[in-house]
Image (cartoon, rainbow, N blue to C red):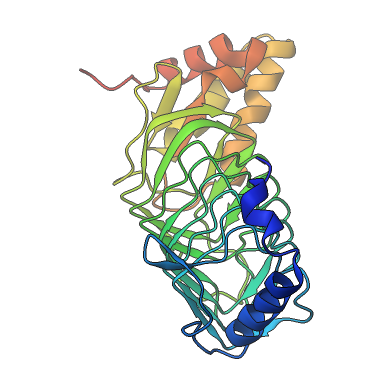
Length: 304
């Protein structure tokens, strides 16, 4: 993460600056406004850039945080319970180890923020977290937990999503771009806590590159995929079963065995109404064997 510009950070280290920071955080935690504190505005938001909220002990509960710019701020280990965060800017802020429950975040930007090891999608008392019109462009989201969040009109372009599992997360009108490595998108209904489905609708991957991206039980009907000759979209699970039969009839070797194991894994994660997206780059020595078995079973690349 980029270092904090000294002029933004040092102003909070003076005696008067420290008192101002304490009062600003106190008011925010109490759900009060920041007018009258003499804070400057940046792009229409109260200028708290470079401030540390780490001094804020205990969870933030039931408050509305609105119209603040906390770029480059130290915001590690914050907890938000039943909060609303609106029209805020967290660009290049250190937001590691955040925990959110029953919280709505909307019209906010986390561009280039550090969100590593945060939990954005916890399910609590029949509710998940909702992110609406939120930018995560180039954010560091390694190992973020997002088990049951709802994302609407969110931009994840060039975010580092390594080891992120969108497990029971809803993705609507969202955009992804850049390299997607070691990330899981799971459209299946899992467990009984979350009763509603978790669709992927109008999601744009046009400018993404899949490198170990795993799609499980996803309906690709309204998903825009990259123009990538290594991607194979299979809409008929019966075709997968036929390909397994083709492989079973062949002389068994390492490539054949690996191809069979891949299709068995596909079978395991299949959900009714979903399609299967396979990436030849993920299959190493089994790529040719797998492709040939699918072609023999009736698969053909899309025309045009």
